[in-house]
Image 1 (cartoon, helix red, strand yellow):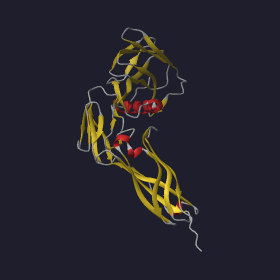
Image 2: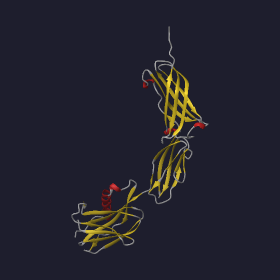
Image 3: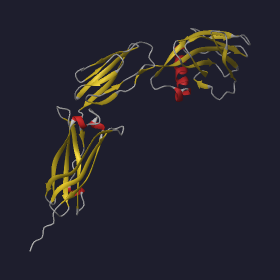
Image 4: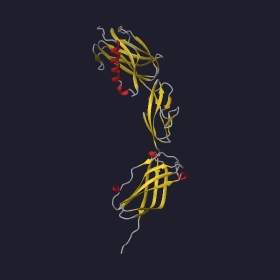
Length: 334
């Protein structure tokens, strides 16, 4: 039997690369490959039909690769048992197996199995005298933060979470005056600005860049070029709460009707949240509004706090619809 001349480190590297390729489709983005069972310092020799037992421990649920390096493709079986000595799986390898990977002076192959945390043993049985190297690798998920960036409206909250962590999480904000975070990862936006929320867990620091934006609705202002000749229209372009909690909505009327617009009639405004809930509404049968032909005028409507359906809505993510007709007087010249 030809001896394997490669160093242990080279074998491990090759097995890592091979296992990484074989399992790539199932490896979580935040996983790392670790060695569960190191190969022996020297090549091991297996006698025909004599089972060889390798015990190992899995500390957290993961996909595990049992990898073999030999001088030439050969026939053998690998069986995995749990701590109760119950067989979980048994895999048969043959010399003609297409998954043998040639690498310099040896060939490597592996099989994968999903294992929970616990103690296990792998039993190898070769059909002929074989010199081999055996190692066990695992794709162990690492702690990951749910968001690396977060945008929150001033006065509102969002909760960050950590997945695949083994230990407790310690949360911290670089600027609590901008956005604070509690022990459960709940981020409260205080004022417009930027800060970094960190989570210390499992010996590493995970970061989320938090941007806090003002609680204000903004949209582009209507222009005369958007309104066809012979008509007029109006829309809201800004909305925010004043110091008393009243909702102030700024609007623009554009008049291309060919007449001097004197008023709006049957006008209405509806403010809806991102979840399509009505936050505020306003109706009026008539409102004086003088706008010359080919001109525009900005005006505002205030909805009292007591009349709001939602006292403090997220205006930045809200939608505002307007309706109503314009009116004018016909003038006759003799």
